[in-house]
Length: 468
Ligand SMILES: Cc1cc2nc3c(=O)[nH]c(=O)nc-3n(C[C@H](O)[C@H](O)[C@H](O)COP(=O)(O)OP(=O)(O)OC[C@H]3O[C@@H](n4cnc5c(N)ncnc54)[C@H](O)[C@@H]3O)c2cc1C
Image (cartoon, rainbow, N blue to C red; front, side):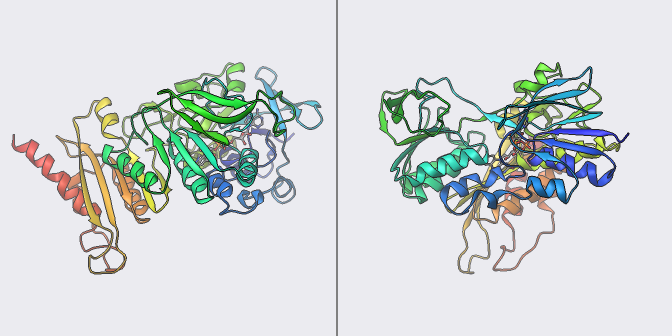
């Protein structure tokens, strides 16, 4: 009998695992179960779907369940939730969310790719109609419909990168946005001046930003929106009250207060869990059960610089980990080395990217870390259209080892942070970065790239320390 592989979760990590395993071992009998109505969707595109840049939900979907089944030979079920894992008998129990029908499926190998779920902060009124979360396509459809219903004012709870992207998209849709962040600044892992600049940018586009401010209550009026007929309405949003007592009127509230790994199934099955309840895996993505692999936003990762466990859920990581889990479920011995947490986002015309450790994280990890910040045009100063790039390098004062990099400015910042991510991965010092042979042409980069300027500035701090 052919070996049977079951994959739970049909997006970035799960489908990468299933597709890779099938390619490597076509005789594997693979089944994928996905509880939402879509597979293979780009959650990262959801803010732009809500904002109208992307027209239809289907545009976010790379592969349909039909294609998986008929073209790739991987039977895939949507709206089918795996409700339990029986590790002793190697079976999973599946419920069809349309019919309620339950079925049992046997596996030889199992991949858990259940992702993450939005954190629901314990705020009075959070259950009200008109409170939205954005994680999957259905969430996006609901939110987009609300945006289209002549909503005029919105509150966003949480100033992480999803909150910021939505602040942009809702503003561009003509909605008056108020963003409330309980931490003292937006994207607090960034250099403080960068956080300030992002806030000023938002405010210049008409977004009201509260930092260091919590939400005391979501205010409601009695009524029913009928968005979720299965739920008894606890009223409709009319605004919210901040921890400082300010009342903000709003037609809807979007909560983007972070995510937690969706690991209830794994926990009930007795698998070992780590940081924030994420599944503990080895570098081959194998869990504490040798027949079970896990990947993506539901697992704990290893920080590449510190070697310590961390939880940094990103689409890039989920795809790669899924591929590794699939390879190993198909019999290979591939490894996933770890993450730097490289990320990029865009808020109106401002691009923000970061990789590696922040100054605070580097110090917390025991490095004698310092940072230096430079501003430099992204092309030759005489060439029209240039924009400032601001780069912050975080490095060890004694050795000059590069530990982190953050950047802000034009689109080109992403490439510069990618270069620095490569440098960190190779264990380079700022001195070595300063010697890199980088490109130059007036329309693209100045003769001394901002990376080189940043490294030479950083080097001064290392040299100063060496002279002491
Ligand atoms: C709005 C938004 C913007 C983002 N932007 C970026 C970005 O720009 N760059 C970036 O790198 N990352 C971004 N991310 C993060 C990225 O989308 C995630 O890291 C990635 O989707 C994780 O993939 P995953 O497969 O691990 O988990 P998920 O995408 O969460 O998929 C898990 C799937 O498992 C299903 N599932 C869960 N439990 C069960 C069950 N019991 N039975 C059956 N199915 C189940 C879920 O329905 C879900 O579809 C963004 C995320 C969001 C929400």
